[in-house]
Image (cartoon, rainbow, N blue to C red; front, side, top):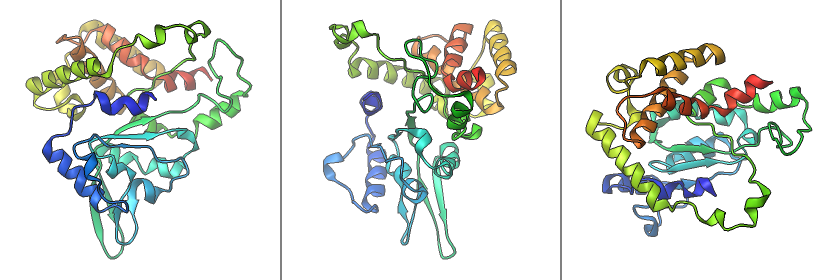
Length: 280
């Protein structure tokens, strides 16, 4: 449900983006439905999907789910159930924003700038780390389950959020219906994106490593905290840069120019799988 709401807080497609989305859909098997003009794409392929279905291919070559999610959202439910080879094929498009289909007779490039959202259980039984119910899985079972996701693939997922079960007393109250509407969240998102464009001419996710020193200024305490986390969890340089970008975005949402230790701490808290693996 949360994943399907993501398009409602993203900016509406510009005309140029809508044309790109329509062009990709028009060369797919199902074609383009004009009722979806300027709608943010949302794709949710089944975990049995092949690499061709996900990244594209065939003869003649057709765009896969990652290209049909261009300028939109790709949702992968039950992430560890996907074939590992299929997930590994997403690594390059997540970095480059495009996918190249190469065969002996042709080479085709499809754009694939998508927002990846995935969901998974913490273990086969679903209760690893729960405070309400004991996990039935042995440590080796949990390791094998989490091992279906490679380190380089996880490094490309900026935020890994643990979503605990709702307390029983909330299920029968009206508190569940008192949350923010998407319109209010979208307003904050648009304000933060506008601030990023005015400051650096691009979004935080588009910042190069060479840009971080100029646009992602860390306080002394923030630098010390992220250095400690890097040493404790043995994180890669890619993760370091992504944590800094997430912290920069958190600061932007709060209207603050300098990245503080609180922003870094929140960004680090979005590395749930690092904590799971470290606790085994």
